[in-house]
View (cartoon, rainbow, N blue to C red):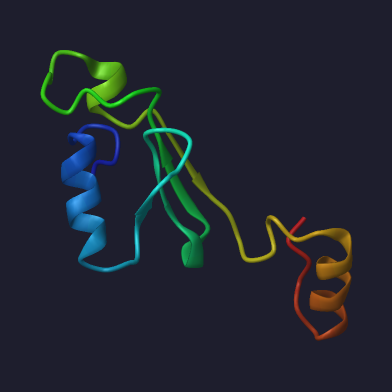
Length: 86
């Protein structure tokens, strides 16, 4: 799927068929926490396809489990045989 070429709401619709994707509270992005996936755009312009900054996602974060662990959580993950996230 073209995450940057499709309108943001179409990307969200398609991804929601497979994952729990939720809108962010403080911006116009979306996050699938279980996948460590975040989609971002600076503002929503869903009704204006000519407004590329708000109609399409501009950045995507994909991280491995543990990416946002605290040092204590990373140590616990490592002690349990896993890889630390950072």
